[in-house]
Amino acid sequence: MREFIVEADGGSRGNPGPAGYGAVVCDAATGQTLAEAAEYLGVATNNVAEYRGLLAGLRAAHALDPTARVHVRMDSKLVVEQMSGRWKIKHPDMKPLATEARSVFPPDQVSYEWIPRERNKHADRLANEAMDAGAKGRQWSPSESRAALDTPPAAPAPSGPPGDAAAGAAKARAALAEGRTGGPVRPVAAEDDAEAEAVRETDTTAPAPTGEPLLPSASASGEQCVINAPDEQRVANAPGEPRGTSTSGEPRLPVAPGEQRGSNAPGEQPTSASGERRGTSTPGEPRLPSTPGEQRVVSTPGWSAAPDLGAPATLVLLRHGETPLTPQKRFSGSGGSDPGLSAAGREQAHRVAEALARRGTIQAVVASPLARTRETAGIVAARLNLDVTIEDGLRETDFGAWEGLTFGEVRERHQDDLNAWLADPEAHPTGGGESFAETATRIAATRDKLVAAHAGRTVLLVTHVTPIKTLIRLALGAPPESLFRMELSAASLSAVAYYADGNASVRLFNDTSHLRP
Image (spheres, rainbow, N blue to C red):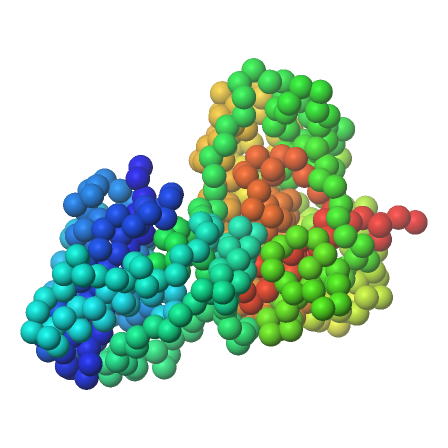
């Protein structure tokens, strides 16, 4: 299915006053501008002009392809929140415009995103051109428009949710390009009326929860139209490749001939070849490599954080200790018997607690609601003199009818379902469990909430195999099949640092040094 970006803006010189809108449609895959629209409206409010810009952009996209998916980006918080269904529409002039906008495409084909004014340059300049034309008693003419020419270009770059490696790198590249080519933008008068100001007072969804400024993204209007990268990319394994289990009994994806497979020690999720542990951080305290005077640009080894980004939110990821199902190599998700820790698992929890206490850097403890994670978190938090907060989003994947079975038993009883599940992240386990794609969506939302709540702090998340691997995968910008190529042991520590500009740095993975005698 084709995907478009619609960026729209509107304003009035006086509120109400002479008003106009601008809208641009871009191809999400290439960033190519496909259509522009602008119009002088006469006397209107800012918000009405913004809605008219949205409506024009949606209509232009529909004329190009009525079956396309559309991602709308606007710098009007009011319009984005109202069209997303999170804020009520009270103003009588905007209700019919919103209704009309919703009718252009089926609701499931359109998504909305707020962006800062400086990232909406192309549409902003179109709106200004329309108002300039109106001041001369004319309507805007495409042949006279310089909006695309006046908006500095940038290299194509992906955008995505905070913490995704591709999105962070894109924003950093855009910041450099902005410094080289950015020019002045003609202002549009104050964008929101009294209703917008009222709802803004109670808004808690603004970006940059750390208080640090977000760097401009390469997806900014007129620089490059790029849709946010989805959390999941469907990648299937080549048919006919052998499958098996590791010494721990976990299922694995087929790999290239000659590649050796590994797997998780515990039986929560099928896994395979061990990921290489990177960095030199000691257990429980990830550290960024630092080169004096080096400017942080992309998420690559060796960069250091720019001072104006502030301290990152660091999530230290602890997989719970062993349960009685672990040595039996059985699927153990969120839909099964919910086992507690075994004696070995409790010993592991005490060992990691001592290691973290020696570091002395954990400031909060958050745990999945399942028994094994709550018990592990309780042991660690007691040693650290901290409370445990339960977060449902950190629970393990639901493995449906496979809960409690070994990989061999699943292959014998549900071979077709297993093969589909191994090949497609959107496939579900037998009995309506949770797909890896659904898990990733849940984990990404939980990550964003925790990063916003704990900006500048180091937080221990006590969770499971799939959530930890998913956080690592998203931070690295890796494809879904990478889940099957990571080793994650019971009571292991991993860590990811999340910065205010959207960059994520994986600082530790599958560290078990604290478990050694």
